[in-house]
Length: 103
Image (cartoon, rainbow, N blue to C red; front, side, top):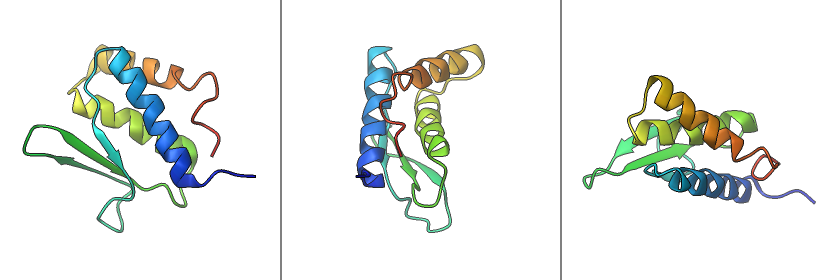
C-alpha cells in the first residue's frame, strides 16, 4: 500500500521543520500546492515577517520536493555561502534514516 503524496509531503515538511528548529533556524510555513498554477514553488512574505513556501508535489520527482523544503528554510533564514551549505547538509541529513523520502 502506498501513502498519499499529501501525507508524504506533510511528513517530509515535519522532518525538515524538526531538524531546522533543533538547529535554531526559523521554520517557514509549508503548503501545497502553490496558488499560481504553473509554479513549482512560490515564496510569500507575510506581514508578520514569516515566510510561506508553497510547493507543487504532483508530477515532480520527490527529491525536488525535498529540495524545495530545504531551500525554503535557507530563504527564511536569509542564509548564504557556508551557512547555507551547513543548513542544507543538516536538513538533508535528517532524511538519512529514510524518513520522509518514501514517495
